[in-house]
Image (cartoon, rainbow, N blue to C red; front, side):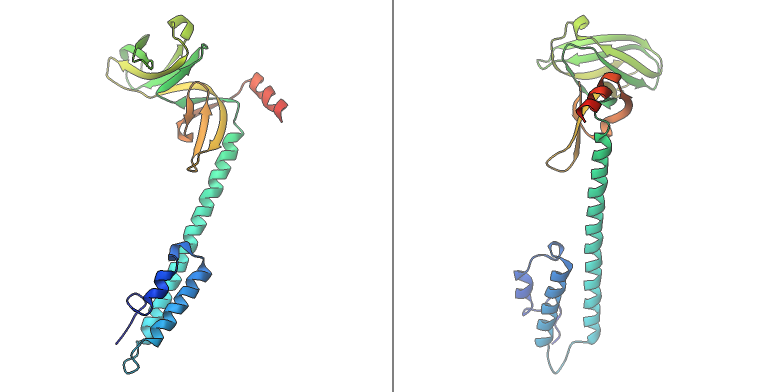
Length: 229
């Protein structure tokens, strides 16, 4: 009767009482394998011993498992280091003026600059702002050629109270371009899930991929940053 690491009943309790291989260190994995191997040898049929090549195969499988564990650990460590470097790099940009893609804008009374990029000429272009109550406020941009279309949202001129508005674009070509807003990069932090969160004025919290441009720091913000150091 031949037994193996995977189907040996006597070895099963040892496997069941241990933690999963993926959750153990290499030393713990080797110790578990040794116990299973000894149990397998003890329970083999003396009249029909297990082929030694099976033990070699099992040792090879153990080596491959350890290699995969080491690779996984190394990959996780590299990802963590890369993320830390990204946080540090973005943190150095706190106080900078950036452009961020967003479909919402938070108004506080001051004007907000933005832009969109059209792939073709639009004879009728409108930026639509929808407040929390569902009321729509139109910013008419008129005829716009293909390319970058800058705009400004002036709450005072438009009679818009402070609050958060959903934005959308209506064009004669039915094109729906993404909207980029200008704002100050206020902070960079890690969320509870480990993802990087960037806070941008007038935009709110966004992922790093939402940032489309870094426009540098204004004199006032640069002086404030230096004075805080």
